[in-house]
Image (cartoon, each protein chain N blue to C red):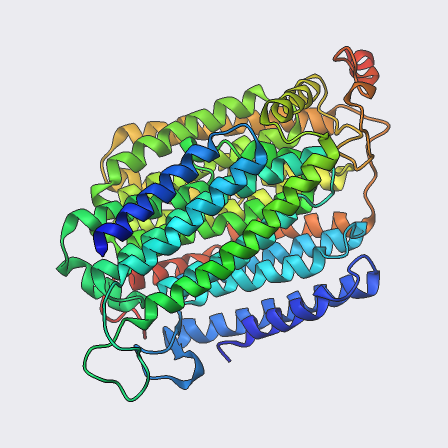
Length: 459
Length: 149
């Protein structure tokens, strides 16, 4: 049961790797596989929500010897989000016609990597799945095969490879200092070992995930990749791949190294604030739609950083909620911005409202949680910053909306019905979360309780 | 032994970082491979114990097998990624006829200039093979942008 989503994706990816993905039949097969994996993850999620964290040691080894899978609410939230984003992007690409034979298989492989990251209970295994997801991303970055995409893909690969290497070094150092690789063991050992090496390790981990997220000083690869690429790949990168960064920081920061996260809080706040302002101002200055959205992603990451830095129940709650909603928003926006038509315009507007944090779109919840966390922390400068960031995002989103959907353009590419249906469904989803947020809020709440090890959090 | 290993890691990492600052994509890739190998050595150094081979049934002192397994995995991954990056570099070379970073960033700037002038995706972006960047918006204005203004 626990390995079902991984198994479905893995076998599906291997089968599709030898098939020609440009044929509609095979693309549909990949959609079906992704759908099955998504469904099984949701079923697993309901199970985890009802009965608490599930654990399993692969290969029937003893506990502590074999590699363990460990699925808690935090992992499930991110797994469902990522697979849903991948599913939407895959359906979108299938609807407009897959251009490269390897594309469906790559998306499935990325699904394997992401699900594995969210389900693993082992630090080194985390690295392995991380690389599986990243390698598919390196290839996906050049999907479309124009000179510009090769340039962007090369930069992307080099920068992220360095990030991965730093993460690998951090894991080796973590093993050396704590003597453990399973996350529970590391968590138990970290408070007992000397502080200074762990701070170094935490810095390395932070840099590695900062690169993935496109946080301010590590953001330079992001606009080039998002601007040159196709809508579905941009959606995958911002909606699914960036989750590695937010999940990784939550898992390694909030869960495994909470003391170091607290010590690093001032750095996170400064970098987050710079990200918000820099991303917002750059988005206003840019004209091309993808570039605006790319810089907007840099800005939105800043909120997650600040929420993490505030910490505590309210802070982690805001961080998880914001990461999830941001992933949905960006997928919706990247997919809809390349299309035309009033229906797409409405969907885009909902996404824009959501990024700006206007009710009833889902983004309002994220902003609300941020405000709550900042007010509980009594840091009024952060409240002002969130407000300013929201104003900036409202400005650039509607600048973009005006340019894309108000100015009549007779030769705008007319999308087919199915892509339009996808973005409308996503927009309705974003609205639904805003109108009926209870399930998501409860899930997030439970994830936070598990992160903080509140007794009785797992019924 | 720890000293020797840490010196090796330092030299490898330093050489890799130096190569990564070069203008040539191939040198950059070699630098990346060196840094990857520095990381592999670092993992080995993280569990540096001397002893018998860890074959069941275990004797008194055995070497830590876990780091070796991890290094092996890391080597495989870095090998695959290096191959991939070399492939990418080849495609960059085929599409630009250059692996010099200065020329590539010049192409990037021209692209950015065209982006600023028009928010429409240009032919290159839409998948048309345009080897000559001058074909679109040679003076910085695409025809559509002019009519809009």
